[in-house]
Image (cartoon, rainbow over all chains, first blue to last red):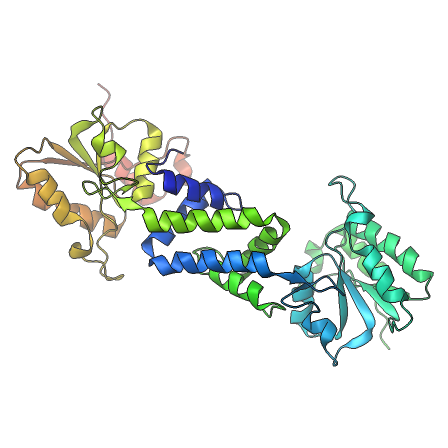
Length: 202
Length: 202
């Protein structure tokens, strides 16, 4: 694409560096910015820059936070005996939105993936081990809230072996047919798994 | 969605003001920015702000430009006797990319749409009339490069009535079956139109 303006070209190029935004979408966004007041664009720019420059990560759970320790880790209402292990901040948000979990989190920052060159040392596993092995740790259970992929399972397996030595119970979120999902459209592996790990009526 | 950080919340809100970007996509973009170096974000922010603050519109054709008069209007290689009338800058880019047109453009800045409250006075129609009625105007034909919608046709009809009084020829880009398109999947109106305005072999 050839642009009549270097300014547009540079803005389009910058926008299209973002994931899922191609040149055409970038141009649509740039032209939208031009149609709005100048303050609209400066607000976006300022907000992004401030966010990037001032963001902190909770030193306990590595979740994104505005302070040294995040609101969840600080809260007195949360159950300190359970930690849910997740890949990134998005998963924390997703689980928090269910209102079904009242424990703490630990954000790994990724999952073990030899293909992408992510090893155990790139994740916050050491920090987790430290967290659960301090004398005043109340942690009794670690829930693996990881994606049901090869990489997710490998990560869970690696960590569960480590924490079991400390006498901590491990579990994983249930895999099965999604609620509202139709049985006939479920893939074979999910369906098979849902039979093997069926829930007994009490 | 509840965020653990006000900075993230504000960045997500700003991003999701853009068209086609919802809260979930905005969050994905924000988390992507966090994974990159800080310079990545500041580059985007700076580029957008500079673009918005310094962009000009060509005083002849109203296309986006870095200078008072755009490269197309300034060029000696373009045919000054034809003007292609388009809705916005994106259309200029699209037509330029075909390399099939060597005339000038006039960007209307929209099309007449009573529903959206866009009237003739909101468009650059007066400027077009001025442009074609000056004594040194060489314009002999105006091509309507507008979308084949009710609004596009209304706009074309309104303007063609005005410029015909000046003895200027008007035409519209061809409507028909897209090249590579299959006849059986074409809608009835397009197919009907393509028969009525068929091209005679010479």
